[in-house]
Each structure stands twice: as C-alpha cells, then as structure tokens.
Image (cartoon, rainbow, N blue to C red):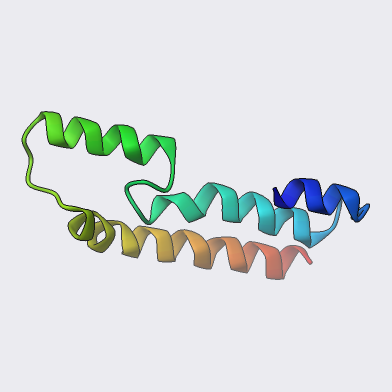
Length: 81
C-alpha cells in the first residue's frame, strides 16, 4: 500500500522513503508469528513438532533479532542519505 502511495506522489526512486518502505515491509513482520508468511510457516512447524512456544514466547525470542535488524537498517539509511 505504501509503495502505491509513493508512486502516486511521484516520489523519486532514490528517495530514502522507498528504503523505509522496503525495510518496514521486510523487517516488520519478523517480530510476531503472524507478521509474515515465513513466521506463520515456522509456527506451524513448531506446533506440529509439539514444541512449547506461545505467541508471547515467540515475540520474546524474536524481539532482540528484530531490534538488531531495525537498528542496522536505520544505520544504513543514516549513512546512505
């Protein structure tokens, strides 16, 4: 949706806004088990294997990784632009 908005606003392809949309779409879903297709598949496999991992447990385990990814993306944007 944001990509369509940026296109309608005729945002320059080299704009940092495009990178923010890319990072948000790709990294934002890593925090919750329903945030992206890959985490839904992972939770399905976890439940099938009868491993004890709840929604909150997933978020607690994923949060440090998501924070590091977001920090790296922010640093990249600050250096690039």
